[in-house]
Image (tube, rainbow, N blue to C red; front, top):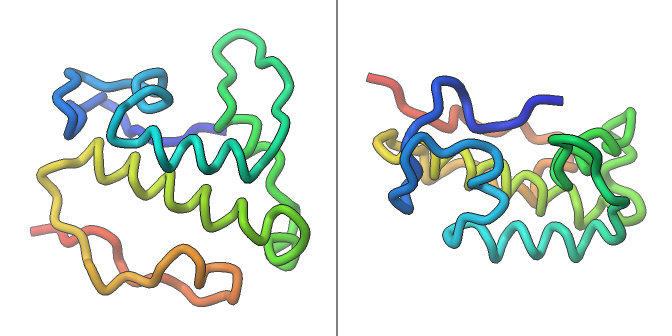
Length: 120
């Protein structure tokens, strides 16, 4: 499954030029959220090739939205949304974001978020 950042790669808010997926697994601005996600998710097997821990988590998502409210996904899902949202913001530092957007913790209840970016 493909996850952020989008192509072509853009500079990260931290100053990294043309930041790619590998950058975001080590970016100092993302590290606390990423580490929290890994701790909440639990054990991840050694990854092959270019597969990363985030790929494994995304590929492990439950097949239904009700699965997101059970077991470890109750905490993993909001943490995953926080990480993906942060990557989106870091890879688009010039964009304006809707600060009234619902928090990721509200996602399992089936509430649709508002538009995340305001385009001119």
